[in-house]
Length: 260
Ligand code: ADP
Image 1: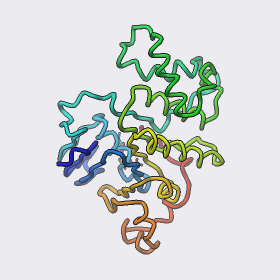
Image 2 (image 1 turned 45 degrees about the vertical axis):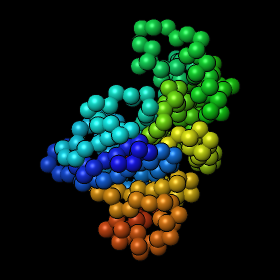
Image 3 (image 1 turned 135 degrees about the horizontal axis):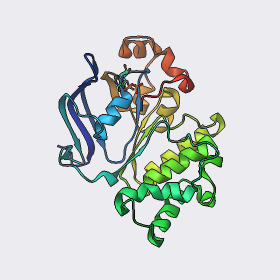
């Protein structure tokens, strides 16, 4: 057992109905990694994340978080989550950026307690990390998709998690801001020491930024360093996935059906 393991999956399988959606997955995420989770649409990526977050229970196998069994684990503030549809407030939504970020502390302060100065400070610190401190008093709905996504990352960071899980976070980020967005994630990983697990379709870009890549289609087809993944030819990749990887290398986020 590696004491640096943040998430450990042992022989994890899961089905919603009759068919296995996640099949016999063994996976360890180690402290300090920036791990990209890629695979075709419907390959079980979101399901795997829900299993890690305890939102679904494996039919087979076991999951440990920070070396504790899921059943007894209760330190959820150590794990930040940014869901696929986080950045979708329309312009009328009446909350300030600071309120949205502070709401990440609700589970700790209790829903009916007021935020104090310390909480506000934490929210401002989180906004600084995502380089959005000057937007603290803006209305969330007035921000662009990419800016909202940064705010949702700040919301997830406000409780100082050791692991941040992001499901398709570049959806809704304007193409010309995507590289800045990756740069932010890299900074959180390198400078703040936050481990990252990011689901994405964008396999080309993720291998440029993540330290490690996991490719799955129900089972895991590859798990290793990004630099090793980049060595694969298209033929190797087709073999790896058991079908054409063309779809994976094309950016078609916007067609995706949201299952979260
Ligand atoms: P991905 O995130 O890789 O696109 P998902 O984990 O969302 O894949 O879905 C994996 C499979 O499970 C798909 O075939 C999908 O249709 C199915 N699925 C997802 N959510 C549910 C659900 N709530 N009930 C039944 N089937 C589901």
